[in-house]
Length: 259
Image 1 (cartoon, rainbow, N blue to C red):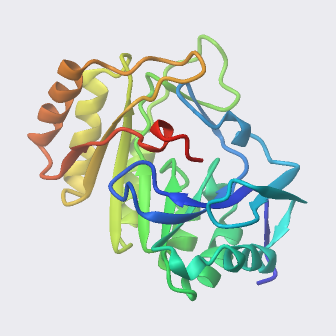
Image 2 (spheres, rainbow, N blue to C red):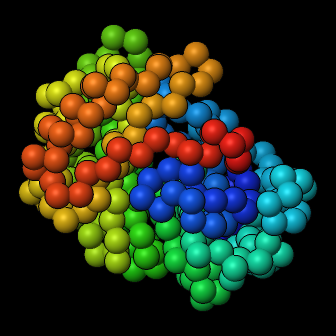
């Protein structure tokens, strides 16, 4: 366990989005992300964090701060202090965890031994990094980014709209080696039928049995409003023509003020 990681926080809560919503979860949040989503609710994770905050008691919302990088042995100690074995799931999230694949691998292996399912939450683009960690995780929850609302870090105004479909499809091919794969797409009023159609074509070809979660954007900080009910139901109906398990699941943790 000699690896270390740049982390933002370690805390206990319940999963607030996706198909595992409501499940007691220990979160290990990694620092730094190489995408810029207009609806991002954790812009503080875009860059490496100087400190990691660690919850002192399970569910208390009280934290202590330690400097980064954090040794994996210290991550394990923090997880054990929060009763990691009483959680059904450990979520490795971000930021983007797969920018630090060695740390993900070490943390996943160490915490998996303590019982919980290892749940990797990722933007679904770091193909080579996933290859190195896939055998240490149980669930891959990957985003499918739409170019209408997402740019790569460093993109300039006026740059062409990015297309992430090829990378996502290659990522999904590897992710299917995990016990479970969920794909999540965040939709806003800018989300277009043509990019949704391209997404579902790729998923139907590569992972027709995966769960596809349609997540309406959660308005926050001056970002986009959620699409209306008619549009959301129309998107679900459209995607369900190609896939058997499409679910409309909004974020829930914002409604009760959880982390």
